[in-house]
Image (cartoon, rainbow, N blue to C red):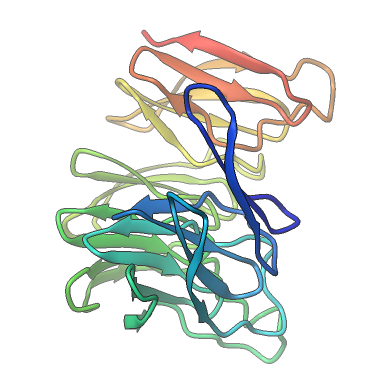
Length: 274
């Protein structure tokens, strides 16, 4: 796990016993990733770290660029095929060799534009989605892209803006944009299949595929079930009650037979899936 104060801890999965810990400069706002015995940790300070999963020894560090103004969030790394894949605050997708941290390639997804620093925010704060040698990612200022993992070549781009994770089920990508519109797109070509605008301005979570549905939470503490085929809202549950602090901010988790959701106040609930 990683924490806001830069603390990294490895714990025994069976007992919860602390195996090792370390500290890094910068906030850790996204889950670390591990592959080939190396743990990859991304930080809000623009630095990427590699640790030995066995001992906690720091093996490498890669310094990235950080603009003067960014969103408070970072891209969660994906560790696979000998590389660590992350999105950057400068609107790029980059791959670092997992053994050494050396930059293998980087590709510009979003380009800053505008007169003010606020207008020029191009953060990729989402964890990339990797499938079949293709990386899918989305930026805050409005670019959804499919990128070839081997070369960094952009396969297709579409105009969608989001800071929530893109999810995938089969050949369909699901995007929740900055205005809480929900979209389904064909991952092969980026063609939009349907859109759902009935939850606008509700600060939705990422859309979690769960059986025949997508599940999203909102700032009012409500969970919404959306039909994956046509985008229609089919069910709703009030998890937060009347408490304004009981928003569902983290995306629900689908376990295969249940949906688990948690509120800001720490209430955890499990729902059966029809």
